[in-house]
Length: 22
Image 1 (cartoon, rainbow, N blue to C red):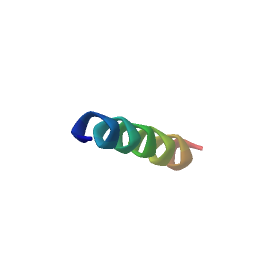
Image 2: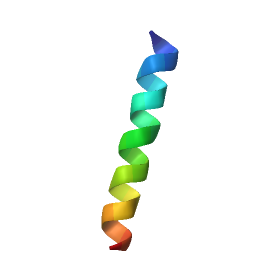
Image 3: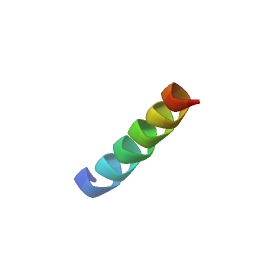
C-alpha cells in the first residue's frame, strides 16, 4: 500500500511541477 501511495504522490508532484512550469 505504501509503495502505491508513494507512486501516486510522485505522479501528483510531477503533474504540479509541470503545471507550474507551464
